[in-house]
Image (cartoon, rainbow, N blue to C red; front, side, top):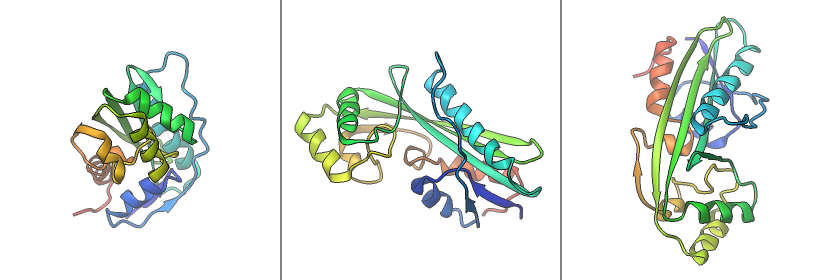
Length: 192
């Protein structure tokens, strides 16, 4: 089988990819994640997943593939990034309280010879109306500062929602494994 490199240092993506049982390495893609003027959240996710995969693929040996992924939270057409600290996480959760947030999770599997396979997943999260005290308690309990949208759906963050609509439950965590497995099979990886 060809080699596989995850073009991400996200521990969430690393843990998810490990579920597929394939050996892989991890490399930091060194990509500027700044949104371009007028760029939609969906377009940003697609561009960044591709850029990450291509940046790492360019450094690979001939038989390797690089898997890039990016997730962008979309609140009314505006991209919401990782908060980085407590006050920004609280502000993000206040903005999402009682609303629907769309999460665009893009994938790109790139080979050094220029071949690419790509996919995008959409997850809609309906937040319940949250009180300032609930938001503060949640942020202090999980400290989701490295998560787009300021929550961890695989943990206590699930208590913030009224509903989740998606095709793949792993997408909201950061790597849609159904689409990932499909791309890997297209590239020649043997999966069950």
